[in-house]
Length: 432
Image (cartoon, rainbow, N blue to C red; front, side, top):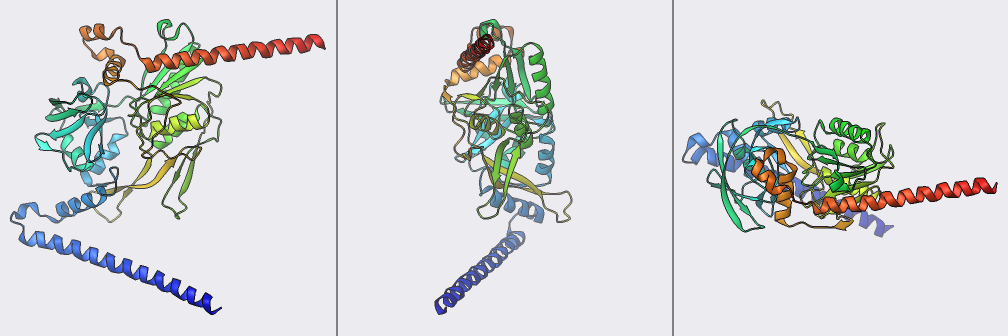
């Protein structure tokens, strides 16, 4: 009994010491920030650069961005921009950017936007923005430099690791209309060998994606589609719920598509399940992914792979499997500010992590940078000159060709299995 009491006393003492240490550390940190803030206000050489809001926003931006590349303090301007981003239209250069190994990279140029038309490719590094080096620049600061008034030019220095090429491009900011479903069609006999194979490409998951997806699927089915290639290459993600419902169209209602788990011990576990009335449960399905498929695209690909509902072809995906929640800071601040904070991580139905790992395909099939560029350009042939269209006319998409070959094998197997079942049924009827 004495030993138990002693152990309990020691445990309580340790907990109290830990709480006291936390309180002391919090006090010291708050005092340090306030002291530095006032020191700058009183002694910095240029008083016009040291107003309280500017200093506080800069301090918070640095603190939050040190956690991971996706955390961000949203000052009034950035918060307003963020709220406009998923509505399908905004001013900018038409690029999704991220930070990898402290390097500012282009995750994906939006098709048809200024950057895409200038030949910018996924994976390009942004070395300078209007002459300013991006070394050490936070994601939020980079976004503020890139955005501006519509019609204004901006100069970027880009480095392409695949070719060791550095080039300068001048882009003009414009209103960007974000497409979500592109290239919906029945594959031609040259592409599919005459089989009824449909093709649908999702460029991101936004507010309009689910409606556009449903319309595209109805159109393909009306044309006699018997199998589908779902192209998620270069898809940077978007809205979680939309990605879940797209995946859910190919699984029974109530199927768990993805779970999110927060800090260990927090009991923050949420399961996102398929719903809706339209489900394509028997449609043979191939999903194309590459190293630029991220976030929502990885949720769709990972869930359909785990559930054995689709075969994945391409490359291991990006590995962006963390959940950011935007939390407005309710402090009677006008205009409002907010915090984008990583609060959980995604797990596929088999509890495989996505973050920093990615989704490996069933059939690994990498492309060269030249192939990637040619395919991306050909997918947007209507934006090209007649000469460039002619040059790309004979470009093949090896990943799409492989998808078609696999689907043809599945369809042949299913048809023969159906014939065997029918023959067995007839034999049983004749025996009786």
